[in-house]
Image: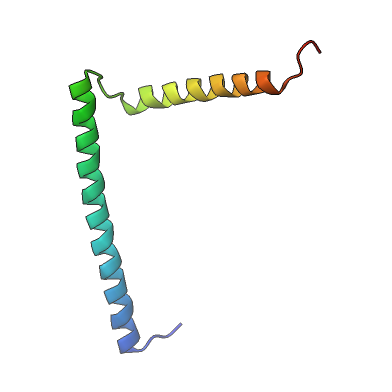
Length: 77
């Protein structure tokens, strides 16, 4: 695929703009994350580490799946 110099400049400009907005979004998400962590700390709940959160989510998902299977299964066979 061959691009003219004007097309290359336009593609570069688009990439720069995408990067700008991505960085802006990252900054907003980091601020939101910090605010949520502060809210958790204020509530007296320590935030979980990644491994603890993942293990807790897996256990919760397993419990929900078992509860869902119990609701679907006919009572008394």
